[in-house]
Amino acid sequence: NAGVTQTPKFQVLKTGQSMTLQCAQDMNHEYMSWYRQDPGMGLRLIHYSVGAGITDQGEVPNGYNVSRSTTEDFPLRLLSAAPSQTSVYFCASSLTDSSSGANVLTFGAGSRLTVL
Amino acid sequence: GQNIDQPTEMTATEGAIVQINCTYQTSGFNGLFWYQQHAGEAPTFLSYNVLDGLEEKGRFSSFLSRSKGYSYLLLKELQMKDSASYLCAVMDSNYQLIWGAGTKLIIKP
Image (cartoon, rainbow over all chains, first blue to last red; front, side, top):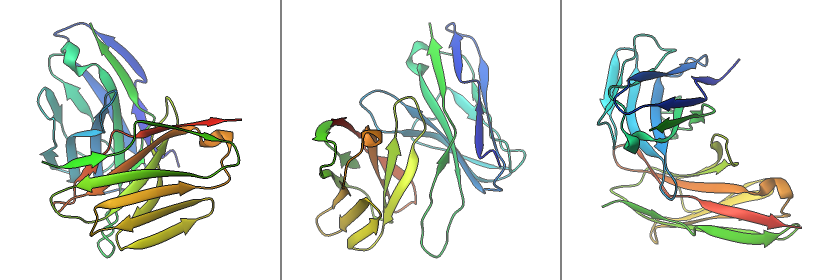
């Protein structure tokens, strides 16, 4: 049981390049999400998905695309990288507990992206 | 707007007790979470409060007052491994998490 697996751990891009951050979970979680974490700020939600075939925008979706073709995988695509996208990115998944409302997230190890 | 406030940094001594406060103003409330994040690692879940009162889990306890928009995380018998950032997050009326910037806790011997 690997939990949430993110790749790559580190990436350096030039402005304008595109890339995909991979995220996979083996816990059969319905909910998956992508966050970015910047110094002095709280985690900010980029995109999320409540199940295969369903995605929605979070707080900071511009410049990013996602898809959810399977329950396991939730890749994040940077379309044309900008220095403002330099950040640490976390993928997270959870089971939605309808009785308690608790949505406990399990995070991947993170991907540190630098855009020059 | 929605806002979560936590102290940026706190220092405490090994073996002592520390209380990390979190105040929030959000559109609705569906629970408050505390996560621990060691430097360079992913956040990990510590506690969840949805009703007023104290939840105890070993050396860690979390308190919630919904009327005051206030929570605290209490860490007892501090160990060096407790040096980490502690993130407060509130689930709003749309079941989205609003995150504080985190409190960096430094433990000194």
